[in-house]
Image (cartoon, rainbow, N blue to C red; front, side, top):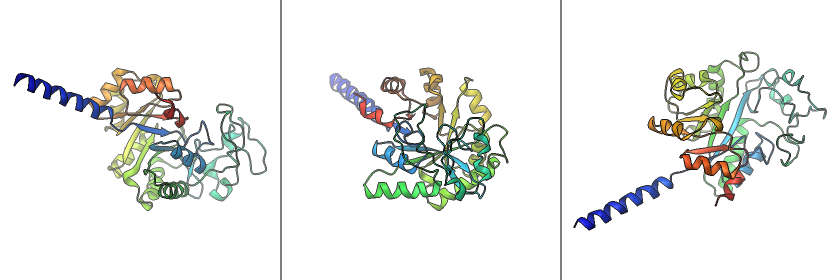
Length: 294
């Protein structure tokens, strides 16, 4: 009898361990798949789906006419942008091309796909524009339906800059409301995460839209508990710069019931390392590396 109970206990432990190992690992394609395709473009998002991402990470800014536009910065970054006349934008002048001061019809005329990206020289190049969040969602939903793919989660970052309120973007409440208007129109609330370095946007979101998942982005080394205290609530996800992540941090997140997803993880070696720590997913510029795991 004792041997049977021992065998049963062993089998249960094995089952629980296998179940834990099979928990869903969230692969988030940064700005689509920006190591491979121009960032925050519809083409990049569809490529990320082909590569098997579970979450499409994207960046949102606001235009003068209050449209939600995909962009890593609230201006045209010199690294990726060409003016409508084909001329380059310099580092010195890039903030003069302020998206918040342009209507979307003007924004759409800039090319953000043809210029060779110095940090991602292997990126596929083609003429591309900054799409609306709404049209990106429509394109993605149509693509997954046509190809019988699993529906992705959308992780949308509110791109604010320090002291940029009313100059490069609206104040947090309006920013969040404009994004949520699109999300609610598309009936996607259950498949959306709002992420931000700016705690103000997450605090407002948590107060007005408490059912929406949140992700706190972190890029400085301060105690985890201090960040959570400043935020004022437990986010769904804690998302630190990958160099800040160790086993202790992973364990503290999980003890509080918070997922931890580091950014930006771009090598097979690093993916394996963070998986060994027990993280819940990664954000990567190169979603194709997941197919190289052995």
